Amino acid sequence: MLRESKVTVKIPRPLYRKIQHVIDGSGFSSPTDFIVFVLRDLVGEAEAEKPLKADYSPAELDEIKRKLKNLGYL
Image (tube, rainbow, N blue to C red; front, side, top):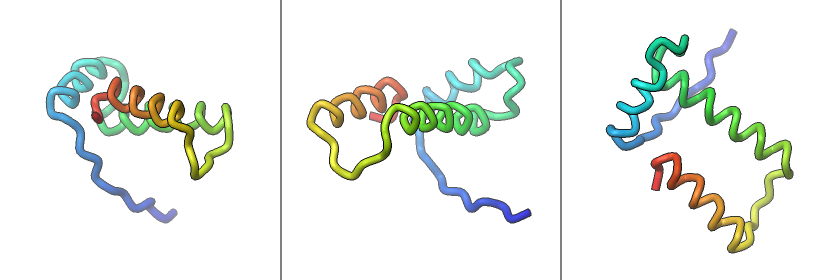
């Protein structure tokens, strides 16, 4: 089986520490496993709601920014 190539995503250290506490005893082997699980879930929901498109309305961009901020990326 071919291994998928990976990239590094940087998140704030305090958020990483919070994730470590959240997953303690949860069955996730690492914060990375948890983050991948959550992102796959979110992307799956987004794909189910509407197909991906290149141009976003200002309201859609605001919603995306709000979600990224809530996740600690902005």
